[in-house]
Structure formats: structure tokens, C-alpha cells
Image (tube, rainbow, N blue to C red; front, side, top):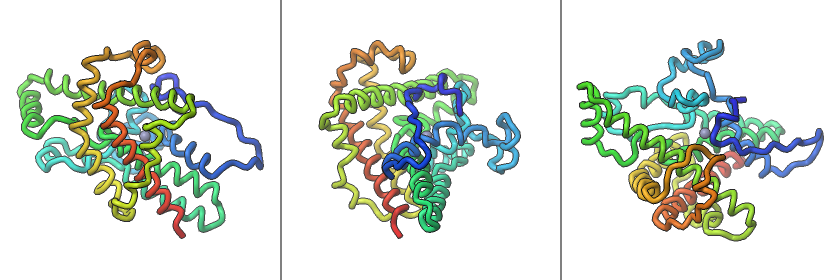
Length: 296
Ligand SMILES: [Zn+2]
């Protein structure tokens, strides 16, 4: 387990299950979908602490924010598959990521488990895999600097190479702040909605099956070519809506001391429109992946 006290997502409650107790398949799937963030993708690289990193063959850690203990899981939970050739040439490390590999691996394990009479493990592996699909529906997991177009990106790089790195640093920090703030906003709101226990547009967005048919069938390229491409397409508008919202609301330091979020009324139509659209994608891709894993 990662030191959960350091994690901004530290809101989980664990429920003991007795031996032989029956649990719903959906509960196994849904709880497993959170599990890849609990530490099993941490320290797998050759330059990470511990001895196992050297055995896996992933090489040195390509990227990740060293301020966080869980940073080494980033290359398994993020993937930048739609950058220009110039960007890849300047920053080759961006191509070294494995969220699609994880989704593929767990889908195979789930199918093996179902086919060999282990439905519990089928749902659990499927939950692990869908986590990586869901992560890539979040634009900040699919685009390193949303809202920064290629010419500005090259200018930032050029200035940084010439010794003026302040602008580049500011862009990276701006993106990290927006990534964190929007997840706080959404998770706080979701918890409030779930506690209220009533129909809500956010829940409707997750459960809207109308769009599912518009997507191609699941394939090994699906995470890169469909999920991630869609996320990248929405990234600039999402980033801009978050920027405008943050101008009206001060940034909070962490999830628990969020006085601002306690008073938050979540009445930000432009931001919410972007958010609900993305949650619709989250729901659709989750169902498509799970359906594929359950198909005979
Ligand atoms: Zn994740």
C-alpha cells in the first residue's frame, strides 16, 4: 500500500468480507476498478527504490511528478499517444508509457479466469483493466500540456534551452494545479450527489448508454485510437473551462481542508458541460471494455 495519508484520493472505506460471503459481481468489478491506484504500479522501474524494478525490464522511469510518492505509477496510468513528431523528437520519454498494455493484460487475465471457472477473478481483473481505460478518459492523463499549441510549446522549449525556463515551469505547474483542482471538484460533488441519493444530471451522464453504439468495437488499439484520441480532442476546451472557473475560485491546498469546496455550489455551467461530456465518455468506454471481457 502506498502511504494513503499522502494521497489526495484518501477517502476510501474498506469493508470486510467474510469467507464464503456472497457479493454482487458489480461490487467486485467496481471496487477492483479503484485498486490499481493502491500501489501495485509503484516502483516498477529500474531506477526506483527496491529490487523488483530491475527485474521487469521497463527501464528507467520515463516521467512522473517526483513531489508525489505515487509518481512512479504515472507511466502506467497516463499515455501521450497523439503528440506531433516534433514533440516526440524533443521529448522521447513521452512515448514510454503502458496504460494500453495494462488494459490488454488484464482483459486477457479476465477472459482466462472466466473461461477456467473463476468468475470472481474474472470480475476483479476486469476491474483492474477498466481503471486504465477510465484514467485515459481524463484529458490530463492523455495530453501533457492541454491548451498549449505546438508553436507555443516549441517557444517554451526554446526559451528553456536558452536558460529561460520560468515559462515552461509555470506551464507545467498550471497544468498540475488544474488537474488536481478539477478532480477535487468532481469527486467532492459526486460524493455529495451520492449522499443525496437522488437522480442527478451527473449520474445520468455516467449512465447514458445512448452514445455507446457510436464507437467502434473494442480492439487492442481502442485505448490509444479511440479513448485517448477523444480525450486529447476535448483537452483544450476542458483546460480553458477549468482556468476560467479557477479565476473565480481560490485554489485549495488539499482535499480535506477544502473550505472553499465545502461552500462550493457547483454552479459553473461552462465547466459542468465539459465535465458531463467527459463523464459520458467514461461511462461508455467502461461499458464497452467490460462487455468485451464478458463476451464468450
Ligand atoms: Zn490511475
